[in-house]
Length: 534
Image 1 (cartoon, helix red, strand yellow):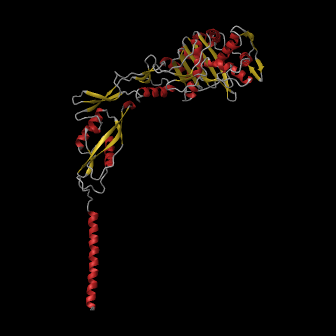
Image 2 (cartoon, rainbow, N blue to C red; image 1 turned 120 degrees about the vertical axis):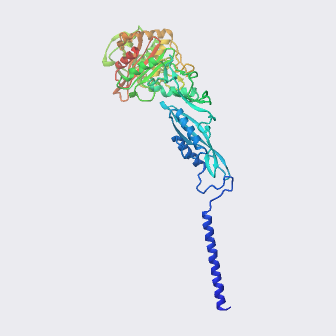
Image 3 (cartoon, rainbow, N blue to C red; image 1 turned 60 degrees about the horizontal axis):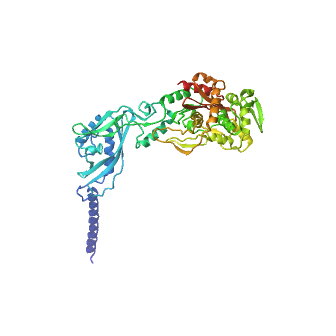
């Protein structure tokens, strides 16, 4: 082959390669500039086109602000007008939406949907929550929300609108006299029980545990109400009724709030109906009044005296020794400030709270003697009160003589709650077992019941408790009417501090006052007087 011919073939080959490369570059440029197509009815979609989830999110974000200008919706004018009218009808309530489920959409799909959760907040912090739904369609190749009144609320139809009206504040939970305990004008009433009262009300009312002060209705085209979507109508708003008394609760709360240290008062009808459960801020926010266990001190002498009357053959008038100090077993007991009464009646020893007398009586009892007596006052009973966790006490048979002596004056391992102490007083007054209740129509379940002491024994206990309040350690209550009771001072921890108690009843109201760290029962007697005066 000639050199010229070889050069011609080589040049031709190079040009062919160049042509192929150029063609490839041109093809790549065209492909890069060409829009992606789906081949579906919606036409081209664009590689940066927003997904249905993104469109729904953007729409809801603007829905929350109340301004749908430029929103991804197929009828912006109608959507803007409807949302503006709704916000006006709802008095400018704020709304917050959260996107829910958005199904996966095939490339050829032209419609889909999305759920969302809406929360409208009205004046008074009333919150209306519901689940809504958005329909989305392809419009000119792009996803948009299809506007309909149901976007605002799923039950709203064409021509209908929403309406807001205030509802007179009615209680969700009422006291025994119909006064508000939760909802209505119940602010500040029974603070330690608010959670329990609201929880039970919510359970009984299908999850609605708060009182709505507004009602949202759906109106037809003529403005006539079709249905209430939120809030309760006045005609059907029936509160759950508690045994509590606003008057008693307020008196108890005022008494404890006026005390500097931790203070608790529990009051109940002798029928078992709880009237008041009050504790102040210093006592903490846990319901110690109902389940806190404490040494009852001399308030437990009600049980010790009962055991002695039943098991030791003594009576309220029997002579007993009351020395200022006495060693019983390995324990040395002393009376308050070492007072010595010599020989007095059991009733007087009870009224003056002679530790030496009752320590000796306890030491003469069988190992289970005090536990049996405590059982008769419900101190080992177990109740399930709807909404409340309760403990009445814990008094077990003594494991030694020394332990028995300590238990006789309410120390050592003897434990009683303020609720249990009030139950003990109620049992004395009623002369029969008492079941504590918080509700009218919701019964307390008795897991472990009890039997009260005999009428003959209780008559003597009543006489002894009355003398406490006339000539004994609670004689400061003489001007408070016919009060029956028992004081108590109980050491705790290292013994450097003591709680003060007064347990008693007047008429058909039994109660217990317990002051943590008061070191004396006198302040408890003073709080009892304030409560009774209220």
